[in-house]
Image 1 (cartoon, rainbow, N blue to C red):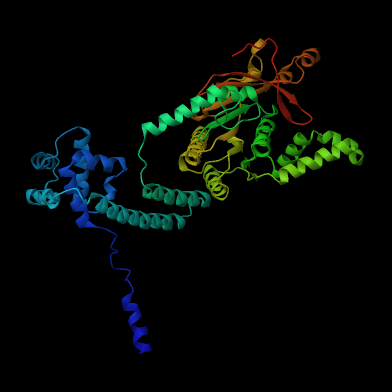
Image 2 (cartoon, rainbow, N blue to C red):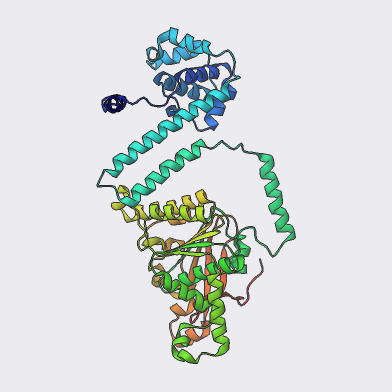
Length: 474
């Protein structure tokens, strides 16, 4: 008996030469197409709203009919048997669906639309199964290709699965009533809670006043020339979020090792500078030691996550961010230091740095929308500020963003950071401007622009709010 079972095993396996039968439901497809002729307004509009394409149907004839039905529906043209027969004939596709007899058969299959939901669900399931098979085949092919970078391969696989997952989820019906209620709630907050913001507070009241806080899906670009303190400004916002708001924050540091970021955070929080620590050594005062210990304890109890992968690709960053959000769903923001140190490994990006930056910028904005989370990304400016003269010397502009105007297009907010002393022509002017710094809010998609006065404490690498002289209200 055992020998019989052993010898019969190979014959039960699928032969490599046998064609694989894909998941399908031809009869139900035919019924669904027939239902469209009974009630085009409801049935076809429902299918369109679900994002149905011709691939949803496995039978070629059903794909042809779906395309014709969809086009005629969108152009408000009748979907009767005579009109469809003529349209198919004009396109040279009448015989592909079995001629007039085949068309008449399809029009007569369904007697009502009562079983639409049930048939639609089954056809959708078969389609998703085909998608999974095709995605697996695609990944198999890419995995065997030496030309495909591994991080690009992993991102592609993850994206394929996510696309299938999105289509599998039930569609959500847009509700004007729900949106009006949410808008009323936001308006009431603004009317009765003047000191609160709708989004995440950054710790800089004037910035929060103009932006109404960092909001889900927004891309906030902070750009500056080297040595202006853009990393410090990002870390100051991060400190507020993880220690005051008490929510996890994810930082991608492409330039600086994670330990250096942590040191900066501890110096800024404790108020004890690095130079003071080196100078005093073991002679620190008791209150200074207490402040350092308090800063250490505060960050040990926080949910700060740092990834210091150098030259990280947009696909790798996207994959890591998704994993972190899955493990820490309450993560409130992502910081990236900085955009021009990132990479994109697509073929188009290899031939053009501008194209590469555009892909990275669009990728970050897409990720912010996908994860419903604000992303703060640092960016480098070109030498434009240095080349200006007179009162405009050192003044940054959006056109100074290096290598791509796509950053300006993708960003919801752009802050241009500069310090007056950096461009002072002599010691007297340097003493006059002191530690003055400014964040020029040059773009704000949902609010006013303008200058945010700041003070830069270089020893602690901390920006604090400053009241500008002769500052006008509003």
